[in-house]
Image (cartoon, rainbow, N blue to C red):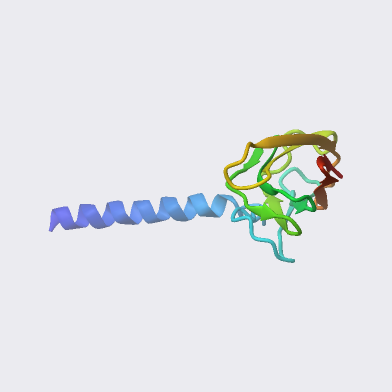
Length: 149
């Protein structure tokens, strides 16, 4: 009976720790879109812990492919989106839920692409200004030579 009580006690301790760890993200009424899903309910955080009401919003990056290629990865400071398959005429949007570790201005975005499966990987980059809570669109386009808009 003593072993059973110890096991139950340890199980309860583990559950409490898991609950508290999950609750830390919402301690300041803050939730995070960490699954990359995009919906109109993407959260904002009220930073009331230091007495001000600044809003921290989730920025997004939309990648559009208007070039006869396949976009296979996109990276910027703090993020690397790999194993992509954004074909000509399509786009994909990413939630930058971890914040913007490099700030919002003059952020270098690198787009890697290939002409077809198995062909050489090429890359192109450009600096963009992001907006807190806004969507920044990166468009791969061009005719014969790729460029970013």
